Length: 418
Picture 1 (cartoon, rainbow, N blue to C red):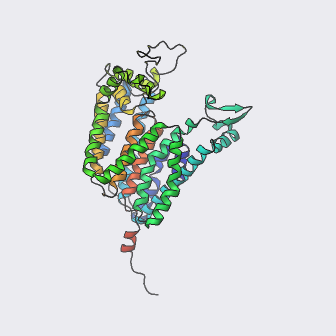
Picture 2 (cartoon, helix red, strand yellow):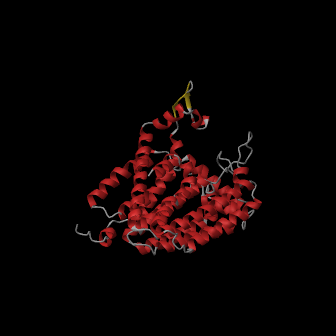
Picture 3 (spheres, rainbow, N blue to C red):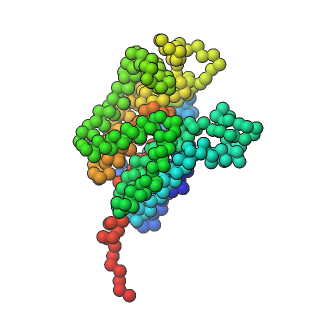
């Protein structure tokens, strides 16, 4: 509970929180069995491990070799954590699984209340902490000061927290659903624990989280109506996102979609960014320019002499990152990286179809949330963001476990007469 709440309040801790997810399952497993359960390698984990190994090789030609190498190491470590956690959860009894599920949901509920309060109170808690401990203050460029005190913080400083909560929403709803609670109690807990967070998402400045939430909700509803069609649509969408992203962004740019008056300024800017980056993909289409190269080429300079997009004042240049995980993979990891990402997604979708049918609507919604947040948000190579995606996966695994108390009641031995 404390770990999940902390990750929502301070998402940069996700890279540390993910490995800590091993502690409780391993402790319960060792206590009950005295040994670790057998760990079976899955195609999904094998593909993800292969991707991490490729990133370690790809780092050799990166312009920021130390950071690129660290990215590969982080991803490989996270794969190991996911693999061991999955195998350990499969070997646990319902009682510890239920305890973990309740703790996870309580943490999401606390994070929900925290975000809602911060949004409506103009980040009162954050201002209180940063005024009391100046070392924790945000970049001075984001602060509105009065003397030595912070009097206002921009709402976009909550964007990472909003994204973190959005990624954990569907696993939390799945866990609550699988706890086998009475209907009235389930609805009450869902309303009290999750509705404040939903309100925070739509009151925030993070448009990507809003789109991801709505897209996942549509996927959840469509799956309930027609599961077979939903599975096909997800495969088609993943093919388009991973294999067709470069031509799609090229077409959007060449047709000057960035001039559309109905698009927000940030969306217009991203279409230009994506169009220019997709053109640069052709310079190293197979192996890419190297992970983290964008962070070097995109460093701000005093004089920006990059060309402007036709008909606008928007600059065409490489940025710190592409704000599009799929295009970032194409540019920095090339076709090899894109094919590995494609394979990972397809294998994941195939594995979802084999899990309990009542969990599948929530699992596909979780997949949609992760895919949409990655499509137009943070750099895909940041350790904290990889950690968040890993946490969403782990808690979705937890939701697929037997967290219900029903089996405990069935399997419990009769109480001896005293």
